[in-house]
Length: 168
Image (cartoon, rainbow, N blue to C red):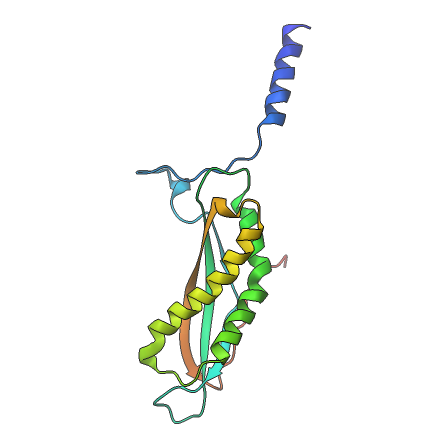
């Protein structure tokens, strides 16, 4: 075998042996690529009508827009985009869990909003954590549920229109 054939054989073997590897950002100062979250998913807004203390109307609408941010915890042979795809498939389950939990609440007040926010985060995080436990690379990622917005409106204001990406 000549040198050229050996070189191509070695390069081919190296290409086949090496896979896609995602690594967490280095500690300390990092390049611009490493700053910020690796992926994010914005979920549709969940709207639930609840009695709100101190308001004359019987119900007010609580609008909650959850999101999830994805970051690599340890070196992995998976991609953050795979985690993002899993989260997109979880959107209906997150919305159903939040809708069920919020609908079961009694009268609320604006002063209870921080506790309500924590409860929403906890419920949504449980759904995400359960799904990640089923994925072989789930422990390689830290997926944190966040609340992009939470606000009250009168009952005449419904869910905002979603802005999904499209080809057109």
